[in-house]
Image 1 (cartoon, rainbow, N blue to C red):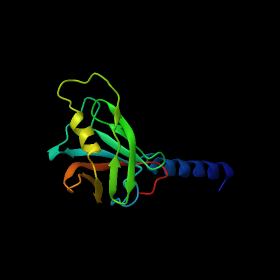
Image 2 (image 1 turned 90 degrees about the vertical axis):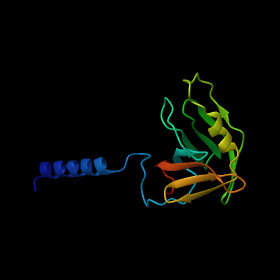
Image 3 (image 1 turned 180 degrees about the vertical axis):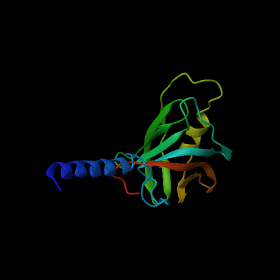
Image 4 (image 1 turned 45 degrees about the vertical axis):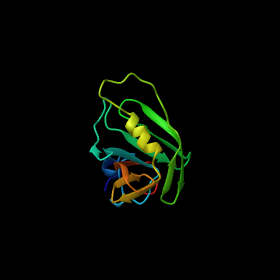
Length: 152
């Protein structure tokens, strides 16, 4: 094979490999998760009712193992605060939120309250349940992305 043909073949192969690689933040690995942290969760149910998306999309939640901070999007505003994790026990500290003017019909208060009342968590496949002190599900989430470098 001529050197130019070899070079072109190698460049084409590299392009195919790069194009087929998962996007940064895309779900990779086994479809079942066991980790709470370093995963972006999207709300699917709150207090037993299907979650509604806000003007900016569906509410999301991430627990960052590096900073021990919970953060996310509540439907209009962003929220953030600390948390403590001990096995399946989870305590979310009082959350701060941005104060954007939100369209009528978007109530973020129930979501923030549910997060702050969380006492434990459990994962089944790619679904996360945040539970109160009586082990009743306050909210249910689905995994949508894994932080780069985190274990799936």
